[in-house]
Image 1 (cartoon, rainbow, N blue to C red):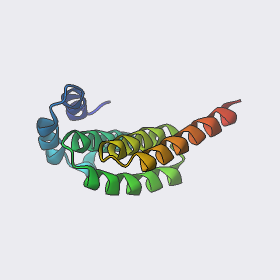
Image 2 (cartoon, rainbow, N blue to C red):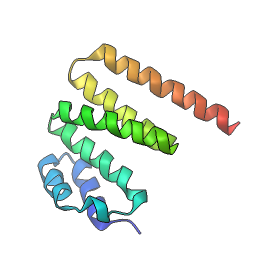
Image 3 (cartoon, rainbow, N blue to C red):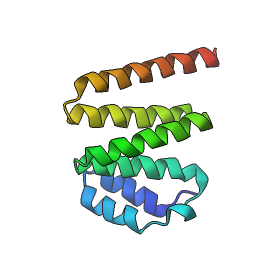
Length: 117
């Protein structure tokens, strides 16, 4: 069962209400969130902070999350986080770094495609 708070936050992020989503995210008890929803929580957290232009914080936590996801073999979630990292880097005008992340994402997509064949 989806956490109603996460659904509400997802709608706030979708509509660009980042201050409200940040407030709701801060009230959630991360440890109480079911494991399968923790990645979604993190992605909403990243999108909120990117929306608020808090890129350095986002990049630090994205790098940490990427390592965690790689260890868990959660490729789709990894692609989502790599996209957010590329997005944040492009907003910071670090276009070369953003391109490197985009190429890493493309390689991951190709690898996933090969596994499914």
